[in-house]
Image 1: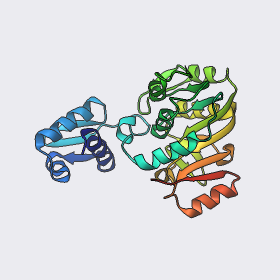
Image 2 (image 1 turned 120 degrees about the vertical axis):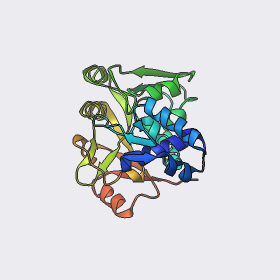
Image 3 (image 1 turned 30 degrees about the vertical axis):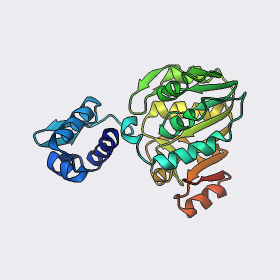
Length: 256
């Protein structure tokens, strides 16, 4: 197991349990205590936990999602399949919006060789993925950096977005509920997402099965605000039926 993947799993574990011990992590991953100490030090540097004698405790974050780093190795096959299907909906010559998130970053990676494409984004990771794309114009919104998702948020980002009218927007969410719709745990990020929806002619939501049934306090939009939703083949059929009843086109991405 790669160190990055192991550290991601440790981050998720400590978020769920609030604390971990070096001994149990050594047994869980079958590695030495020195390896675990290095992992914990790296996670502490990233602001996820605080090391203690013999283990670590969760470092309380401001309201928000787990850091990008702690999520990028989860549901990789599902996210890749979803991104691949989303990429097939993007044509050369279009102007699109790409939101922040690990699935969206995967989508950006698939657009490097597109022609005459303009991408507007608030995601640092999307900018990095497309920085070397020879025929893709990348426009970053600017704003204040929201570190858990490495996205630019706030009034500057919203004002920048309102200067555009785009063909298509591709958004992600940490929480989708059939009752509450799309919600987020940061008010400023929710406002940016809502603005992206407003300025796009066609809106597509990318969401893997683990995000269903979750809610947070900052409302982004109702499900009906989207034209289409792309998810993976582990999403419950009853959820898919409900989405279709809301008028959404639902596309199912199948893992290889």
